Every structure is written in structure tokens, then in C-alpha cells.
Image (cartoon, rainbow, N blue to C red; front, top):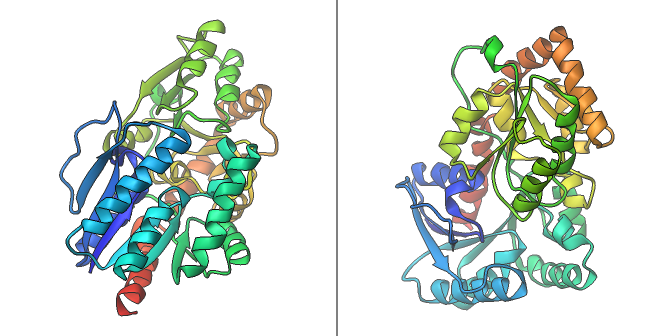
Length: 367
């Protein structure tokens, strides 16, 4: 089956889509992933699936989303042959739905997040209403849909009347023997991901004021890039905080393996973050790196299966610093979390999760 996936981000750094497209491609499907070209985009590397970038004049906001969907619709309208279109999140849904309806193709929806509840949207009533109304109008026309966690699946099913399956954002399994952390690595605290609102980055940086012999390494860029760098300068933390910029998934895997602790400090600023299940959580577990994360439903449930994280009930620089200090001094607790990571990674891996994905697409192909 010929499948086209569409996203609005840079294809080089989208680990979830790389995993999904590769799994489908090696299992007999012809896959094309469409994204957009950005000024800082690095050249695409050859993969098991095809890739295409659309170049837009506008870079953000309503004009960008409008332009991207028009360009995407035109491409899908005149693309020679395909059997199904999978729209990733609401921002590519209009083009995917209109093209599938016009050309009578199968349609699938993949929600990586609760788009109308992300911090950039949730407090903008007009923008939020637009995306919510779009979803309420279009999604009932979809027979197949999936998302990253059971919490979001339940919300979407109730709100849109569509059955959502769950394909978690877990990492590829690692077959290496259990890692024993060397002393010179007991200092690298890692944040990986977008530098956007609600990621707890300000608290993480400010916490470094209270921590010695530790270094915060930040891999990624985003809307807050300059603001966060300025914060480090203002607090004289440039020797304790390092910004790496964009890091490719392959390099990020190596970087994560050198970390002592991984941060996932989402603020409760909308249901999208509250019910999130970030890939960085599973990346850390695969690398046997304990996680400092929020006590949100999905992470709490996972931690009850395998205790791999320290859960925070509230977010502040002082609490972050205190929690990290406890892990520094309580080596028994740290070692316990690390050992649990080794157990959990044998269960929480893409090799297990991809079976759900293949089952969904088998049903799509048979329909």
C-alpha cells in the first residue's frame, strides 16, 4: 500500500515519524513522509522511506498554516498514485481530508498531541476555537485514528466520537548490557526537545544556581531559544548550562547514553502537556538514565509499572534543585532507578509497540 504522511516540522528531527515510516516501509508498504523546509534545515539522509519537503514563504501563525495546507493539498491532488493519507495533528488535517475526499483515498489521523490544548494555543480563545471547530467538523469523517497515550485517546473518543487506538512514542530497543555509570559522567543533566513555552526550561536553568558539579546540557531549539540564552547570561550560568542547538536523532542517542539524569519538566498549562507521553522519557529509559518528570497521569502510571523516575508535584527552581540533590547524595535510590530502567526498556520499546501500528494499517489496507 502506498501511504503518504504529512507533518509541518523538519523531517530530520522527528523521531516518532522516522520510526513509524521505517516500520511500515520494511513491512512492505511504500511510504512518503512530507514536511517543510526551514532556513536551518540540514540535508535529508537516505532512509527506507521517501521524504519530501515543502518550502513556504511564511514561517509561523495563520498565514503559515494556510500556505502549508494549500501547498500540501495541491501536491496531494496531483500526486500520481497513493492509497492512503495520514495527517499528523490538526495542522495538516485540512489538506489531508480534502485531498482524500476529492481523490477517494483512505484517510487516517495520528494525534501526536492535543493540538488545541498546547500552551501556544490554549490561552488564545479565537485560535483555540478555530482548531477545535475544525476537529469537530472533520474528525467524525475518519474511521481510523491513533494517538500517543490512553489519556488522550479517551478524551478524543469522547469529544469527537471516533475510536482512537494507542501507539506510544517509545524508543527503539537497546540490546547492550546494563550500563554502569562512570564517575566522570555523574554530572550531565540532559534536556532534549523543543525550547518552547511550558517545558519547564526556565526552572531547570534557574535550578543550576543551587547545584554544584553538575552541567545542564540542552539539545534543541525553539521559540524561547534567545530568551533562555539571555537568562543564562543574566544569572552567570554560562559555565553550568550548555546549548547544543539542533541534534539529529542518531547523535541524540549517543548524547543520551552519556547523561546522568534526563529532564521532562512540563508545566500544567493545558491538557496536551498534562496527558503527554514524550519520546524523551522513553529515550532516557532505553539509555538507562533515570528521569526527573512531573507527576502527571501517564508518567505516574508508567512509574507504577517500573520506578524509573522521580515525580514532581509542583515545578519551581528550588524543588528541581532539591530533587536533583537527593539523587546526587542518595546513590542507593539512583542505582535502583537505573536498574529499573534496564528492566523497563525490555518492555517499553518500539519493537513491541510497532505491532499495534502494523495492526492498524493492516485494517486500513483491508478496508
